[in-house]
Image (cartoon, rainbow, N blue to C red; front, side, top):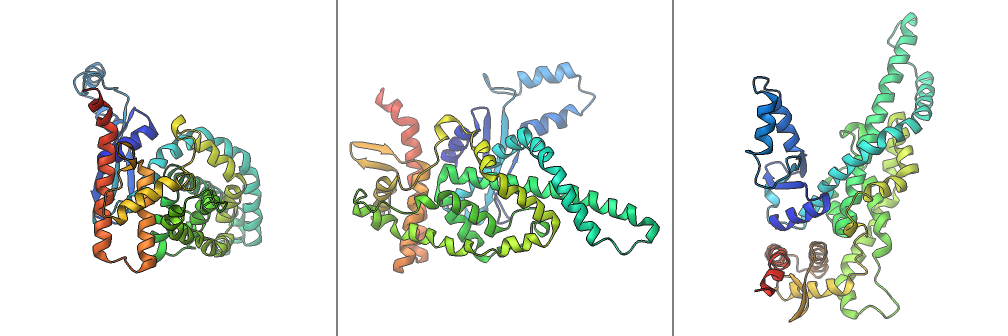
Length: 385
């Protein structure tokens, strides 16, 4: 599925963005880049290379004919252990969000911080005055208080910025790939501490907060039509999957994550801003997507198509196309991934989630993604032969 996803990522980020997908030993997903900019800056620091010589070489000798010398190259990593588990690779939707989050941060964070910093500073000063440092002599107390206020003020900005970046990435992945990202997040965090303070986990939002934010964004599409318009096969194919996702509401009803963040003024103030501004911020970030992706993936609207793909998986057929031959269309990446999750949850509900069946489903999904991409890429060319 690498070529298919590289094409998908490029269509989201823009034609001047290129991607390399590689395995890594640690069990984590990540994105690194812009590699082009990094290596250009690195080599430009070699002062013995004349600027004119380097510029001429960069724009001619080092690039394929017709390529843009200002293009960007990103490396997306995934756990080697999950090489065949494409349902986990829905996380790549989150990783592409880092590019959009960086754009939003560059364009908007300074303005946001200028708007909220006075209120944050007052809250920090009030908190420090109530609990001043005790390890300093009285004559150094004012200096110690000022140092503490400055440190907490800067740390609040860092927590706010990091939290917004991760939440934007979640929002972008959910927007592009639908509830499949929420499903993967729920599965991944089954063994994680859900309510850890951002101060203890590198500034990342608590998992319960992230899951709640994603659930709120897509909960309205987790119920199939009940007015008779939806075909019965859609309920049978997607019913267990959507019911399982609706149970997330019980998980996020708890507020222990918010209570943990209320315990320190840094996280309390940072997430007060996030809660107040999130809807506007999310809209600003999504607006960076190309026109073809401005409308969010809606699983309810795709219920009929997804039912066809789930039916193929049940018959051990790769879910690569929708319709009946010869009137068929290649299945989209988001459709295939959501159909895969629907089939997986159905197997869990019926007791069929054996390792053998799961491995078979993974191979079928990989074949479906590859075949769908080949059809999209070469189908029009074959028709012209």
